[in-house]
Image 1 (cartoon, rainbow, N blue to C red):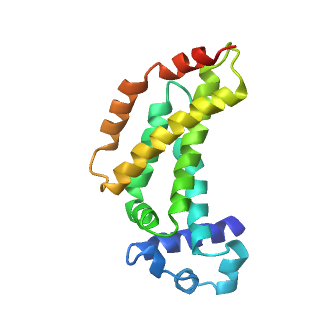
Image 2: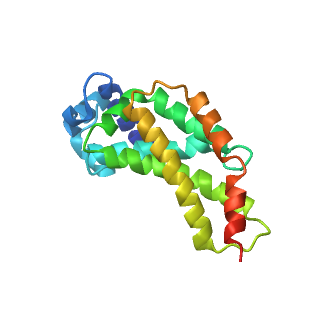
Length: 184
């Protein structure tokens, strides 16, 4: 029941974002749209931004699902771009609001999960310290998220497939080469 209520509250927030900006939406607006009382909202979330963060974090897992290997990372990252594109109103409102940290956290979470799995896969058989693997994953995570934030900032004009194609050409083989440089 709790997940159903959370999903309903999330759907209400997304619906309201089609009509107004995030900073103008209140808990009362969401509760009224969802036909629950405000106490029900507060039972699940501290505020509208906590709901926004929940939306991003729960949907992050679905976005990359089975695309966390070296051979499929492009598909996982493409899915993240497509999610952002499909939820443009939500994302743009979050980007331009004081809730931007929740969007950033979502993007870093998606990139971190995807890249750590890829780095660990490519590190099999190599003796690379965990902190070095983490450093490599972080380097790519910040590059990936930076690209996406710039894409959002500039209005999401470029096709996600084109961005992934350019990125793939740029870094193909680089993760393995980086691991070899840190091998002990």
